[in-house]
Length: 124
Image (cartoon, rainbow, N blue to C red; front, side, top):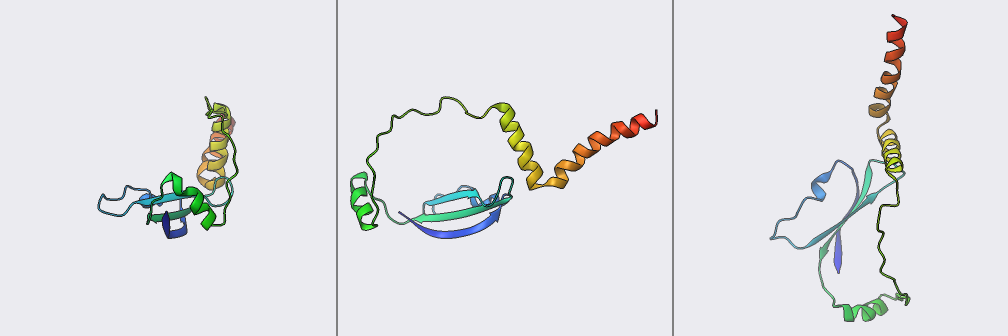
């Protein structure tokens, strides 16, 4: 069980939160997810400090205390054998995310790449 010690929005460049903790400190779990639409530079950071451990046999009792139920489902245990996203789709997603997150840094080189040949051909 973890006690939340940090819950805030950070920028994607703030990497100090995911650096390894020193051995003398309490165990800390760090969860980070995107905060916003595709290409956002903001992340939700939630950190927790380990306060208690439970054995697997104590889980039903813990769920009952928290008023939660567990559905009995079987899992076949099959993992994805390969990435379901093709390399072209992955490349397209990365380009779209970079354009949305920082359009100036991405679009200006693309525009210049298209304009320079036109300017060059005008002088020939």
